[in-house]
Image (cartoon, rainbow, N blue to C red; front, side, top):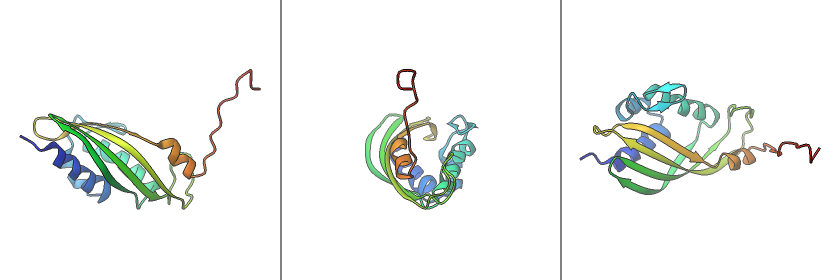
Length: 141
């Protein structure tokens, strides 16, 4: 039986933190959805984009909430310095810290077939100084 928790921890350590892209070829299945496609390259595309904005971004696993059968749930905290463009936000040099959770599903060979993450994007944008205003309505105009 595959130790999916160990694979999940390696995915965070190698791919997210160390930038060892070759590890994605071992850990991510071809059908795993990513940025603009599927497979290791598509999963790496998201990480490359995030890494371009926050080159020193580091993830710390706070908790492995569940590791059962073919699924693992991770709670994590990330921190890094915005040195590149992040969506519409130009580089600020601001250090940010935010939390999130990632849910992984594995195939019978122990490769990741699905990655779903949620994070405190609103908190991250606030730390970058982005002002977010609610849309105007006819009543508020």
